[in-house]
Image 1 (cartoon, rainbow, N blue to C red):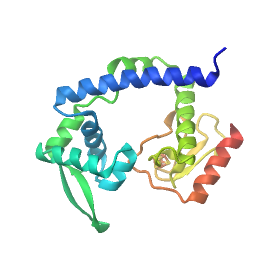
Image 2: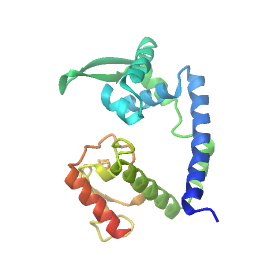
Image 3: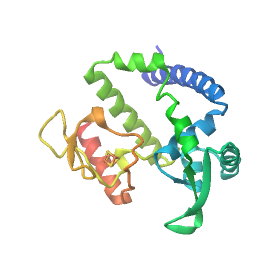
Image 4: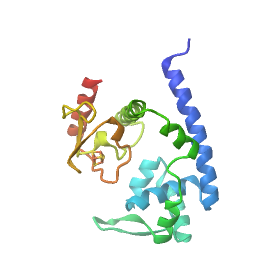
Length: 207
Ligand code: SF4
């Protein structure tokens, strides 16, 4: 009998194949490629440093610069010095880029329908599982740090008695549950390694 890991990986592969094909369709329709779409989506939320973007997208700075240069030529982004560090460059969306980014669907329609069909407990469990897997991969240095709750300095897990909303976000000063865990949050700020390790240990203890 094939292992549980094999079945999960098979499921993730199917979703990835579907996701990639959908990304190419959307990108083609907008006259971009999937990497350019991803860059535009991210900088539409907030300006990003070149080095940070390359890291989070898992591509070299040279590849990223090519994609940014192409977006720049199309009038979708511009580069400027980072206000916090004049030696670094930031990528900022233009109004035209923001309009284009707004046309990109959050997810393929069929996937959105499938996710909407999940019950609350299934959706929350799925999000928690994905969060834990991604955090494990980060811990193993297999993927870069994501803007996610588990490594955010505002996050405290399992600090409230309400089982539906046990976690706390100090940024908005509110309790929330697994269904509201973020894997990409515009308000994210990286926690210290010690604080992130404490969060990780607290989650492992609860299981
Ligand atoms: S700021 Fe965002 S990433 Fe940080 S804890 Fe709050 S919701 Fe999570």
